[in-house]
Structures are given as C-alpha cells and as structure tokens.
Image (cartoon, rainbow, N blue to C red):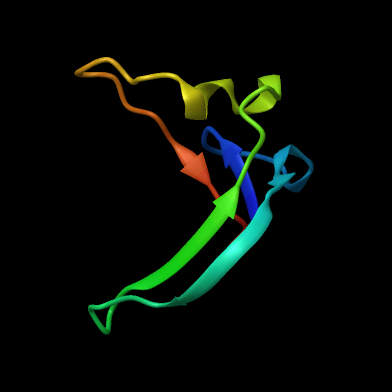
Length: 63
C-alpha cells in the first residue's frame, strides 16, 4: 500500500507500507485495507501525532 501525508503530492512522496490484509467490509460499499508502518520512521510522524481539534490532516494514496 502506498501512503503519504498531505495534499497535492508527487508520486515520489508516496511511502510503501507493508500490507497486512485487505477485503470487503461488513457494509457492501466499504473495502478494508490494513497496513503496518514503523512508528520510528520520521516520515510517518504525522500518523503518530494526535491532531488538535479544529486542525485538518490529509493523507493521500495513489489515484
């Protein structure tokens, strides 16, 4: 799975995550993807930080 923090990113900004599982969710309109990241890698600091109320965080995957 490819993931990056932010908006309007280049493909080179994407980071490869280790895919754990994927498949349909309980709701037919939902597809669930589970991936693992190393919390010690600074690129994922935003994933490991609580977002304050009123602040938006954006994550992007390949389109």
